[in-house]
Length: 176
Image (cartoon, rainbow, N blue to C red):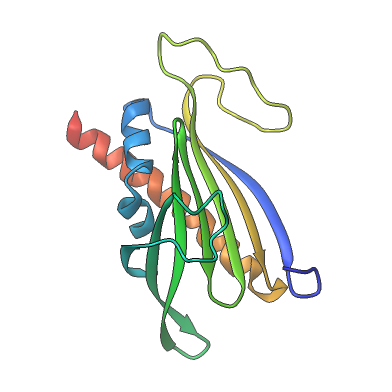
């Protein structure tokens, strides 16, 4: 996307995980793509699809989905939209790249970081405030879109991270 059309917004969000969430549960949840997709309250459905023929080489063999959402415009006018996203599991998390309508290009990387009791402390990174103890979810987000859409997209993304941690917490409590 060229600069005339869009704005690039990058941010990192650190969310401490409650002590009852073990690393493996957090990773299992991130690797459950359907669960990650469904966290967005706008999503009404998703299904696995083949990679588009024009997919980037590094994304071609990852898992692709068609995602449907209902968005509300201006005066309560609702519209159903469908778009593609690619999901790639990492040993410590998940990378996604979503090609949403209206030129919204989202890249997310969620990683489970930090230390559980008995594990060595993780070296701290410069410029990123992370908890001194315990596990945390690190979300690195890159949004490319029309300037007019940036704040809406960023707000939706930040809300989704909180919902994800809430779901992890509930799941951990059920397993206890």
